[in-house]
Length: 432
Image (cartoon, rainbow, N blue to C red; front, side):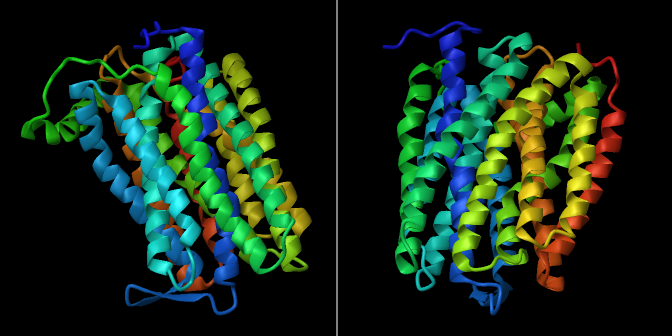
């Protein structure tokens, strides 16, 4: 049996960060790069209406709505599961369950075709739940395994490792896809979905080997425990009244995060449908190169943000990043040519990694002294997921009604501006 490693142990922290290496292939290959391309070839912009569950949808709007529904499910079930995990002390088992759910759903997406649309959408749906459900438990490990002064850099390290690992797999997938043409290239895209699931499962084993099970108290699961997570969320909500800094930060995070996550989830669909690519081959290569640029620049962005937060403070750094995001969304409305998209992608990468890593570690620093970290991070994740539901629904409705994702993207500027204003309300001396 593996001996439990102490808090702050380098090997333990590396194992935690390595799960980012394992699971980050999902948001890159499935959410950002290959699947949006594949989906775009199945349902091109011209005649992209899709009949699903008795309704006609614009194809990209349908993906927005399915994504929103998946996040709603995660927001509902994560308090239940995190409450059980805290009570029974087995958060690692839940992390493993969602990991395998997401990974096997990726493998199932190999059979996503126009004729098999219901099965494909189902796998896409459960892949989202698996990835985001696992993050509830993964994020909650951060204050358990690292001391306060270690958390900013460890959080950034996790994201950086995720970017590096996912880029490696994306390059493999890029080689497979671009070495073929036509139907064979589409087949390689489906192979990429399966490779994503296999990668996720295999590399997660290193993290699972070293991460502790949780605060094991030997308790049995009873009926009362089932909804203890919601009671814990209510308790956390009541605690927010006593911690003004935490409450104000979480409010700001809720607002700007709905825009950040929405942009990240729809960026490639925007590039696939709204940019004037010369031909399908250029579109495939151009979009994947753009995603690679985002990932590589994001590594630099996470490091720069970590350094900036140490010098200027977390909140001031987040204010600047939100301002940059707002400018990006306004500029995206006017992006029409590939070169414009490449430049925008680089700016997105610079602030994408930074805002994710710093948001997570800032929340961790605001937490009061407690052993009940999973419930606090469940509250954080529920806030994030509900924000994404709102963001994706608004985005999808504007896309469906106006027929253009440009209008949807520029509307997200409002959330960044409001988030920036709310960050100014966080007490200036709230963090060291």
